[in-house]
Image (cartoon, rainbow, N blue to C red):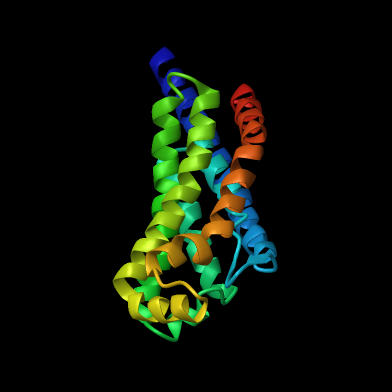
Length: 204
């Protein structure tokens, strides 16, 4: 009877945890959708900024790296919904789909891996590192995608904008301000992420 009661209690606890996870991810998924929509109105150069990286980091920290990957995937889908990828879709549809999907998903996954690895040592360090890694990976994979799928077009854009060096244009004129904004935005709100994670774990 004791064993049976223990198993029942364990089952209820696991079910409760699963419900909380599904609910939490549902809320964060909605935040990613809303933040990406709002971010589509803020532009530095040809691209809108990504405000969604903070909820991605929160999900990756609260749950497992797969949660960060899921939220990153939703971010990627919203890039298409908000038509931020239209200029690239007109050039190379498969290349655009691969680049946008991989950059968001991997950014969330890596942020989760970094957080859960460093959180064993220091939660503040883990949060700041995950918050920094997310935009770095997101932008880095975007630049790799530009090199693989859109290099000729980007080269033409660089000349039109007065850059003889296409790589300098990609880093400075293409994504520079967006990346800095996203990185600073994440780092500024990192303490909020720490507090939210602590509050959630105390409730658990």
